[in-house]
Amino acid sequence: MSHHSDEQHAAEWRHLLHRYSAPVRQQVRALAAMHRHMLASHFYVQMMQDKVASTYLSHEQVHSRLHASMQTWLTGVFALGPHDDLMPAVAQQNKIGEVHARIDVPVNLVLRGARSLKEKMHALLQDDASLDGAQRAAAGQLVTQVIDLTMEIMSQAYSTSRDRNSRAKEAYRLFAVAQNVSTERERRRAALLDWENQLMFDHAVGLQPGQLPRLGMSEFGLWFRHKGAHAFQGASETETILHAMQRIDEVLLPAFAQPGSEGQRIPQLRELREHSKHIAFHLDALFEQNSELEAGRDVLTRLLNRKFLPVVLGKSVDHARSNGASFAVLAIDIDHFKQINDGHGHEAGDMVLQQMASLLTHHTRGGDYLFRLGGEEFLLLLVDTPLAGARRAAEKLCAQVAAEAFHLPRDQTAQVTVSIGVAAFNGHPDYQTLLRRADAALYQAKHAGRNGVVVAAD
View 1 (cartoon, rainbow, N blue to C red):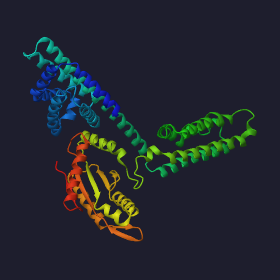
View 2: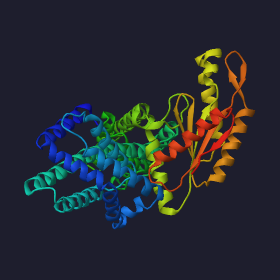
View 3: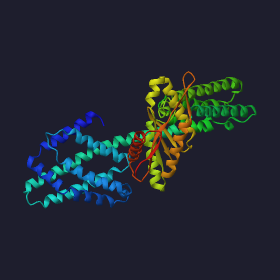
View 4: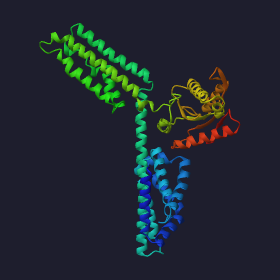
């Protein structure tokens, strides 16, 4: 969320609180604090009645944390006064909205829970004999407006986060279309050449113009219209290629059938050939740009970078929860990497990182995901792998790295080791908890002497 938006929400919150007297605010604060356990239980019970919500909230860790977090949230949002710093409270609502987006809780379920809280707190206010009618009405309005404002802030953060995740998912889909850019480019150029050769052959053997192969329906044309144009959407070259294809199919090829066009065959074929060459030229330009596709790769190691980490982890969590599958992550850190940079220079450090990426790639399966998170940190996601298998894989990688001679400038070599933290998916819908467990295990491995593996506690 933008800082300006946060400041606006804080100002609105402060203005809201100024409209109510201190006794009314104090009464609502006391009511929320006194009944926080019951209200949290009520919220959880109401949410669990929804079949969709139950799939997100059934995990025991979610239940226990949600109950405690809801109590803290209730006492926190109603304890604020108009003279308090409200920016931390706004930041908290943003964070909650982002978590809801990350684990894909439908926003209508969150709003349903908020509605149940308002109804329960209104009922408690009606039963409070210490309040007169005016105070009870004011307290009820304060409850409604505070909860509505917090839901608005959460929903905006939820929407922004979902939009960002959707763009990342789309970028990842496009990235998967052309992971190996050079290979993909050659395949598409070959398909374009195949169409051109087929056209020339069919024309030479005397096929009628209506029987000549249309570029738009060729292997190349189908790919570009349905995938390529979408992948490179917005680039001027994309429109140029589409217009060239359209001219070939709708103008040049039908012109072969026009009466008296026999004497124009050679110029027509030359123009058609020129259009084909222009398409190949602009196609190369598109693949060379491919900033959106290549943005998912680390420049130095060519591994996936952080951009697609939320997409891949979210997809893995969904698959595991839907199919009862298992997966694990390995947080990998090169030991004493600073000493390599300080002792041999940054060129040596880059060489070690590249060799490490190559070694890890070579010793992992095609279905696994390998990321460089930055610096000397890597993350390996092992698909369809239980905890025991992940431990064995980590121990094997640790031994393979230690046995490798890493090449440095001036024909020098170095022995390099890694520390690895292992965490297996335990059913929690928020992948951040999995990453935190893996990071904690890695921290333990580093402080246990390095060159080893630590498995995270469940």
